[in-house]
Length: 472
Image (cartoon, rainbow, N blue to C red; front, top):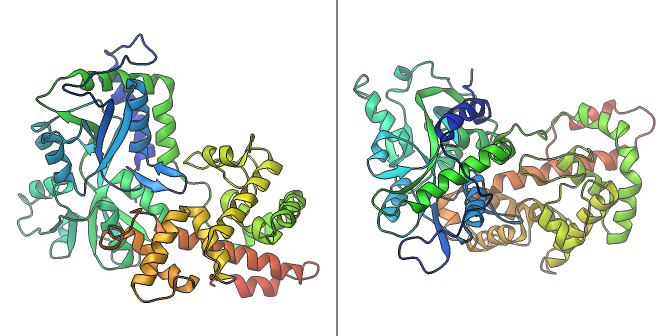
């Protein structure tokens, strides 16, 4: 059985944080401007890694829980935020010691690291978990992984844990990945290129949304808090400001909201065709006039808009994702502002806004891209952003394939999760495999709606047989 993930441990976290922060108080809703030692730039420089749990460029700009907290902390201090991405854990601590940043966001607290840095208040409790791919033998105990290929991030807490375990398992061995992060190792396990890895439960939780074949065998070692790291031998003003900031975050409920947003169980996983057909019968007639109207206005097939909305919200006008997007078309606040949408929970505004945004993405693609490839690429951009799509098209061209052909671009989108490739691109890491899944699911939903148009009465049995294994 999988160990509790970060959502389950959030309850433990609340008690722990209350205990650790209970003695700290702030009489100010916002901190006075903190003058960092020797700082005249008016910036808060935060060191972190690229990844879905930390910081990345999403479809609507910078995203990630660590980014959100760092942005709010900078605002709390009255400073501008500057993010500096460092490739690996050891590099983060070296960069902090060298004065290249004011803090490191998102490190597990270990006794070894405590000797090097000063940790701020904990905001999450994580477990180190042994991860394998479903369909392979599940190890029942640590002794079962001896002699197998294990790879962990160099300088990570997992490496420290394995060092300690080798005292009782002298033949335990592993490889240190000095140029990869835990997300990337999990991707290799999912691909079947790596037998095992060890990663923090928050990282595993997010990645299992994208790669459901990743399974957790068991937790290794004691739980660890997550916290920000500050220089040990510098002025402590910023360090103490962090305690005031997290006290305010905890008391306002904002910390719990962030954890739920990023690590809560997603409500919108892919469902069986039978369930989809039930939604088609019960919910689609309610919103079909809106899809028809917006489709005619923006020259997009209305059934395609309906398929996008189903993938986004399951045709639930009040839907909200873990990342805070809302409504039938799951629009972000920034997208609403750019489109003039004032109420994204209003079905008419949401459908119109989503259709207009998709039309913008279609029109922004190079004229040489034909249909239907043009539509599939626009849908990928709807999911991960136009910039990341262009990175995938660039990789396609670099590898000698056709960047105007969806079948070729589709094969390169997952490379945006591979450090060997995404470090060569302009906009870096993106969950490219998720974008591929997103497009293919919409294609299935769209195909079903088109076929139902030619199916009379309740005669859907043949359709179910055709689509029970929905592939494109």
